[in-house]
Amino acid sequence: MELELGRSKRARRAYGFDEVALVPGSVTINPDEIDVTFSLNGTRLPIPFIAAAMDGVVNTPFAIEMGRLGGLAVLNLDGVQTRYEEPEAVLQEIAESPPEHVNTLLQRLYTAPVQDGLIGQRIEEIKKAGAPCAVSTTPAHAERRAPIVQEAGADVFVVQGTVLTARHRSSSYRHLSFHELTSSLDIPVIAVNCVDYATALELMDTGIKGLLVGVGPGAACTTRAVLGVGVPQVTATSDCAAARDDHHRRSGERVAIITDGGMRLGGDVAKAFASGADAVMIGSIFAGAREAAGRGNHWGMATPDPNLPRGTRIRTGVKGSLQEILFGPAHVDDGSMNLVGALKSAMGVCGANTIREFQDTEMVVAPSIKTEGKTEQRAQHVGMGA
Image (spheres, rainbow, N blue to C red):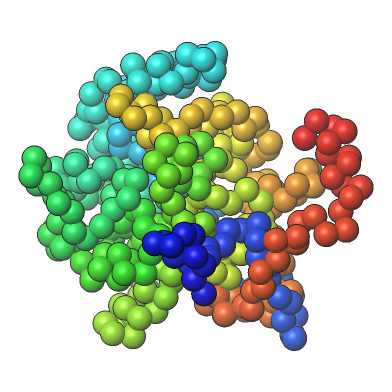
């Protein structure tokens, strides 16, 4: 249904995680018997969780631990891990910087050139430990870095920008061809970021194996405020999932839909899958892991942009180990730990054995779902300064 914004403009209503709820199924299932495995072009992951390519989250030790636990971490090839041979001192400087100076500091630190040798070295460190390795770069560098990445042994190549399309107009530079990129590589390519059906369908026709969904929902991203661009994640995921299903019916190829950002709690994660996601990419929650690179700090990929920064450093604090965040035991009651357990429990309540079954879960529009009957909880949080 479209709403009238004015005499010359109509708009479709879109929904975010806080505005919807899942309807329990007529059959419930033991969470311990539920299958949440995720496959990407033959690469099988025991859990459908991917750590975002954020410098405050992923370094090589974090990627190794994420792989040990059954997930996948994406290393940012345009970040401090590939600009500095010893990035720990740089990360410490970012963590200790006063808020009023941090963006200027980030802009300065990110002027150091990316070293091709460090790209191969970081990938080899992850693979040597037996973990799967995914890496991310921008469209401007994707063609040149693709052979370096493949030769070093990476399993997944992510091309990441604020918004990516299969068609791009520019008279000053050559646009990346996803057709050519996917044809030149033996490893799967994931494109980032998309929020609508038509663009998703066009990107899928280029041969990509995964599509990240989301523009600006991340906790450290300010794209929506700076550019005014974005679509709430439930609607964006559902629209892109419809493109996946139509593409699969037409071609026989299933492109993974990966909801990227906007998830703060286990309930948000469950709603992302029920909206149509095959996997989720998370940044800020994982930034609170003891193993995360940022020492309890998180910042967006576009934060160091010298012309138009679209991010900020936020303080997540350290909540616990990565294992506790993924599998528990949870020692906080806000839903930010034991994400896998929360997902399986939600699936069990809704009667879904697999992620694909969970994608058919009934949803309702419920803007009061978190506040209905919760007067005492809200009062307590206000009293605690939350």
